[in-house]
Amino acid sequence: MAVVKINAIEVDPARGPELEQRFAQRAAEVESMPGFLGFELLRPTEGETRYFVYTRWETEEDFQAWVKSAEFRRGHAQASADRGAEKPVAHGSSVLSFDVVLAVGAADAAASASAETS
Image 1 (tube, rainbow, N blue to C red):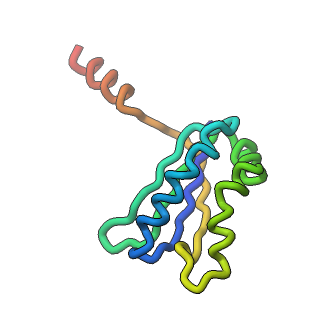
Image 2 (image 1 turned 135 degrees about the vertical axis):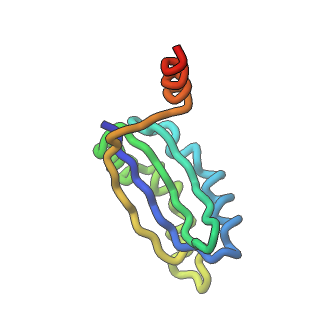
């Protein structure tokens, strides 16, 4: 069963583009990690100021290995440096954890629709 981790990051709306650029520059850090299944950076809309970093992992152990890795430290070095800054890009975050109990993709939906019309 896959696990999902969502990091909800509080970001000053004026600094959103900077956060997006940072994530784009470091995306390769996570892609090669064992057990990594996917990543999405979700930009807030409609009055929300938090960005959501959505990752999927094969197991909790795979996620924990990522958090303890040199790649994680490299990818988060700028955020660590920002902690003492007068106006950091992000000013708070929390990680939400989920087990995936049901997942449907586009191909699954198309196959279901095809079967229903047969």
